[in-house]
Image (tube, rainbow, N blue to C red):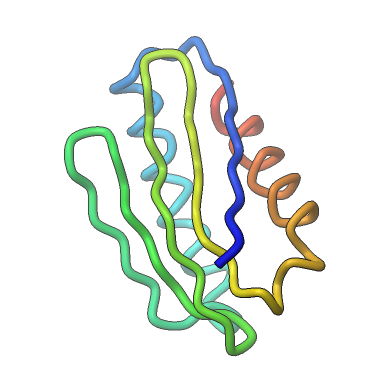
Length: 100
């Protein structure tokens, strides 16, 4: 299965970055409620494992909030490969907005 990865630097510190990411994730759940199904997320320390379904495709991965970088990586179904660049740029844009 193809993968994607996004790294976004920040200078908030690890705990503050985790708080901001968690807050935005809660808002996004409501915003994409009709498009995203079976959303699962589990935090263990500063790493969140996630999975969800959208447009009939399953996407899974993890987000690691490090002291100076947030790294998101995951698996895409082959059908979503045409959108890999868009997916990565969207994730990067959203993270850059919140990690200020």
